[in-house]
Length: 185
Image: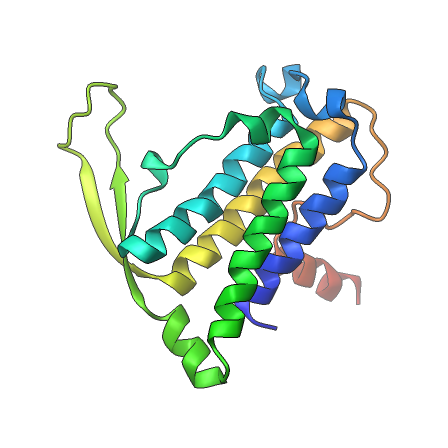
């Protein structure tokens, strides 16, 4: 399974989870999330994928400058539609690569990661860093970033008494799952 497949699988798991939630649960503020919402975390993680998609055309990715689509945060159905659109993007990468060497070439294509580590709102560019990267590395980041936010979402669901059946691996990194399986033997 390729990294692209892993991302598609994870996005499908997110959509499956969302389909089990009510709109109110999705968009209501949670104390355990410091006043944020499950929808806010979903919006945030999905926008990283959009930043990669947009960045691929530009040759650079800047997660700081990503567009924030608040509709993803508040409308459950729209969030699911957004996941469907991102899956189309990822499947497009697969279909553009009709053989393994072409896929490798696409995944290893250079892309510049632009990050601003300045926390003031004045736009001070002193801490802007340009980091050489690849599409593969940024898709790996999206996967790991989504896993992290799924763990936070899972905490909110458990804290709110929401039943999480057959989702024991939700928000758990693949390396942790493998480690747990090794320990169980």
